Image (tube, rainbow, N blue to C red; front, side, top):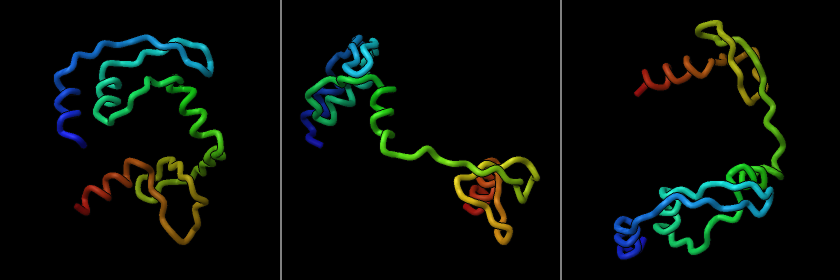
Length: 105
C-alpha cells in the first residue's frame, strides 16, 4: 500500500454517515471505521448497498449448506457437520475439535 495514503487515512477524521441502500431503500450507517478502511484500500466510492443486500447478492449463486447431525466421538454430544459422516471415521463437535487441535500445538 502507498505509505502516503496510509498516513492520510490515519490522520483524517471520519464520522459515521447514514446512506440509503439502492437495493432495498433502507438506511444504513457507513461507519467511520469502514470509511477509514475504504480510504486505506484506495476505494473512491461509498457503498451503494447495505450489508444485508451485499451478502444476499454474494450468496445468490450458492446453494444453502446442508448440515448433518451426528454424535461426537469424544464427549457424546451433538455434532453438526457439513459432510455426510461415515461410520469408519470419528466426528467431533466444535468444542472437542478445537480442544484436540489446540492440544497438538
